[in-house]
Amino acid sequence: MFDPKHLDTLVLFVIGIVSAPVAAYAFVHALRQRADAFTAVGKLTKNAWLGITGAAVFFMLLIPAFTAFSLGPFTPMFAYGGDPNYHPPGIMAAFQGPGSSMTLFWLAGLVAVMVYIVDVKPAIVGVQGGGQRY
Amino acid sequence: MNWAVLGTLTAVPALDRPDLLAKPVALALEQLGADAALVGVAEIDPALADTAEFCAAYGSPMDGSANCVVVAGRRGEDTRYAACLVLATTRADVNGLVRKRLNARKASFAPMDDAVAITGMEYGGITPVGLPAEWPLLVDAAVAAAPAVVIGSGIRGSKLALPGELAARLPGAEVVEGLAR
Image 1 (tube, rainbow over the protein chains, first blue to last red):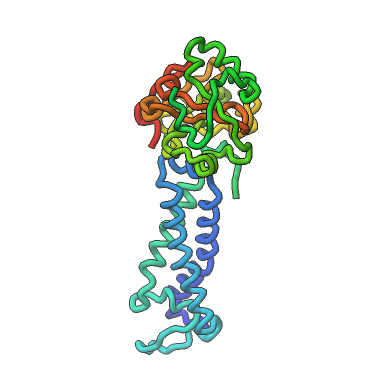
Image 2: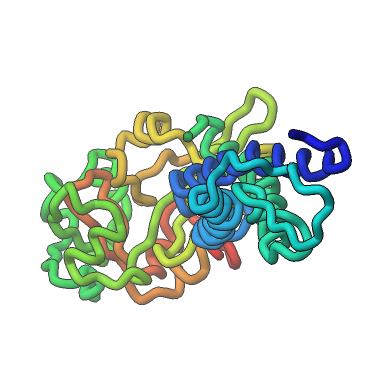
C-alpha cells in the first residue's frame, strides 16, 4: 500500500494527522486565556490569535476532515502508478502538494500553530503566575 | 462632583457609606482629607462587578472605567508587587514597563488568592485606594487625564468614582506614559 516512491507523501500524511488536533488544542487554549495576558507579554491580541488559530483549525482539521468524510478516509491512497490525472481520495486530497490548492494554507496554519505553541503559550502561561490553564 | 461616569447609578460621597467600602479602602479615604469628598460610591449588584458586565448593566462607558491589576515581579526568591491602573478599554504592558519599574526578572499577574489575602479586598473589587503602602501604583497617563473614572471599592457590591487627577496623586502613585496599550 505504501509505495516507497511516495515516502514524502506518507510523511506529509503523518504530519497532517498529528498536527490537526494540535491546532484544535491551540485554538481552545487561546480561547481560555484572559485577554489582558496577551498584551501583558507584548504579543498580538487574544482576538488576533483566536483568528489565526481558528483559521489553522479550518485548514488543518475541518477541510481535511470534510474531504475524508466525503471521499472516504480509507480508499487506497498510494495505489496510483504515477498517473498525473489521478486525484488522491480521502484525507490526503486536502494537502496533496501543487494542484490541491490547499497546501499553502495548510502549511501557513501549521507554522502559526507552532509559533503559538512554542512562543505565545509559554509566555501567557508564565504571566498568569505559571499556573497552567488548559 | 462629577460622578456621571457611573451611568444610571446615583453616587453619594464615599465616606457617607462606609458599609460599601472594604476596611483598608475606608481607612485610606479618611487619610485623603478634603480630597475624600471628590470620591463617590454607588451600590451595585455584586454579580455585575466585572467591568464589562457592570458597564453594560448600568450604562457606564467602558473608557470611563479603570481596571486595577496587581502584578508580582520576581527576582530570585524576592517577590515585589505593584498595582497598575489602566482604562478598561486598554491593557497593561506587564512584561515591559511594569517589569522594568519593579526591576524584576519575571513579571506576572499576581495570583488572585495572594492579591486578595495581601490587600484585604475582595476578588473582583481590588482598587488602587488603600493598597499596601510599599506598593508602587502605576497610573496610565490616560487614566490621569480622564475627568472621572470608575474603580473598585474593595468589595464587589459597590463602585467608586473619582477624578483621574486624584487617582494620579493617591499615595504611592506614579503616572506612567505608555503603561497601557
